[in-house]
Image (tube, rainbow, N blue to C red; front, top):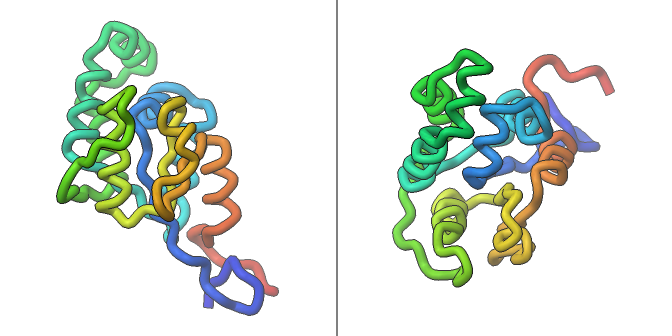
Length: 163
């Protein structure tokens, strides 16, 4: 039995929704969000979720001149990086998008995705979301904290060293 927990217990699944700013950083640069996305992909107990509105927002952001310059530098197209992300994430459909963040209603789509996914974590660099700290049982954290939580709580793919 694989286990990342003492006593042979399996780690609880971690369900994650990434804000578009984190996804963009993960796909175009090699900083903490990139390492977080890699950690999510390596761990069988971590699932990544998104929604159609969040994918549409990512597509719009990837079409901006700043993203186009970066994509040219890394030799990728917006379609390629969008496909890379959609393959990594499971799509959920929120029943509703209730208003939570009055200052930035687009952030409500991130919260709606997390609620629909029964997520444990929302990962964002956005001050409006981070200032919430929680939405119900869902923690809102920055990419660095999320990377630490994912690595600590999940069992990686591959053989587990003997106890």
